[in-house]
Length: 372
Image (cartoon, rainbow, N blue to C red; front, side, top):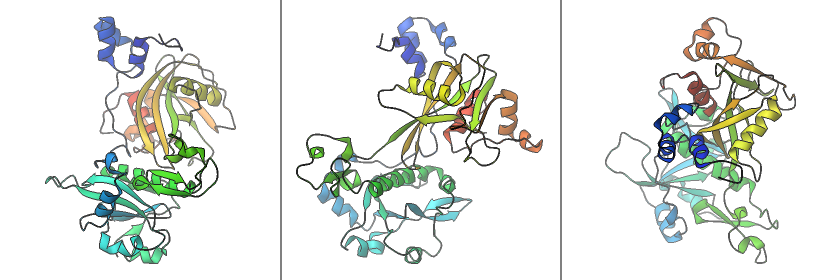
């Protein structure tokens, strides 16, 4: 038993490892006590076909060689917005070659670049192609000069932060990887420990303080590595399991309701973070918490940890500082929206887009098929 009172069975149930539950207890029927048997889900931004080759990042000689290869592909970012093509009703990466951007890499100072990995982003190519891919910050160029790299391409608009969810699903994970790392470099040019200037190392995955006396140079310190903020996002299920709790923030588009969510705090388990956030925002008490799946969220650099939370109370008390509204939604009402019937009948609310982990949590609750 853990310090928090969890048994091995409790932990296996939380992570949805039904086979482990059976192995520990010797009772195959106990799996029926797991509130929801979940299938494996790969979320949007969670697919990345590249081999990150992390062991090669500190081999600067190899990195320099790959930077200059004719086959190397560069993904350009202008003020954190990717250079893309719009075709077949979706955005796709518009890669450029070394000869196109060599003048930038030969300049001083060099622009920020990130080694993303080896591979191919076109899954229709099956010849084992393993090109090197880099993200390159071209923010020092005027926007008009960036557009000259390809007449058919555009810089994805920053005015609509959700435009990034129009990316090709296979390429979205690479965009998330690039955008999160470039955001980190933009925000952490100075050492968080002593305030001195930092230099980029390990092909964009580390920053080193230039002050010899800085304690960040003594051992391993997270001030030297990319920041990642864990966020719990959860669908609260009513005691009778026939309703789910959704809320809306003041910044949401009109009528949009979604799952509750919040940042984890130091020294807090996932389960405790889920229970705390739900209580703070809605006043609902929760007992069992079950992990579902996670999603990288490059806005700017979160990891969304999706869970199902099982309520033991029904009365809602909204914290107006956190939410504008929250209420219970019956399964039938949610199903009507997911299948489009609710829209035809003039439904007064909407749900998150399919690319969001909140949509996947809601879909799992109503037990819909994967093609919805």
